[in-house]
Image 1 (cartoon, rainbow, N blue to C red):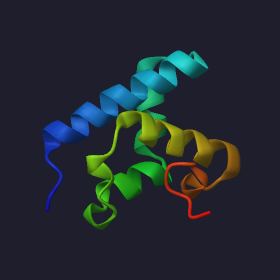
Image 2: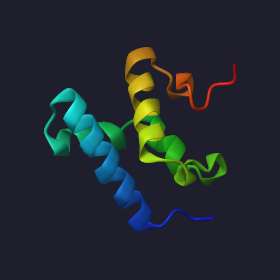
Image 3: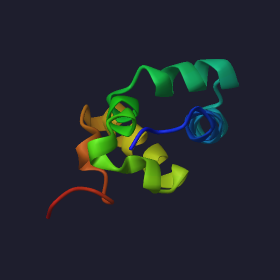
Image 4: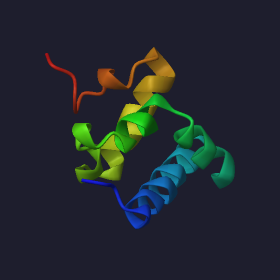
Amino acid sequence: MRVTAERMAFYDEYVGKLISEKYALPEKAAIKSFLLSETYKMLMDTETELYKVSPYILFDMWENEKITGEPGNSQYIRED
């Protein structure tokens, strides 16, 4: 399945807003940070099916990536 442009725009804006609000970044900078992340690459990979998850989970993955270097450290996807 291909992720639609509308769905990607939704995630870009929503996750960007969450980043902007928490880290006091301008929205464009926050969206750019998300677009350049490993988390975003994972979202684009339809095999991961991350396009089915909440933007809050993607935000958590992005935040874990920034803190630990690995989006897979998110409590929502790690295998403990």
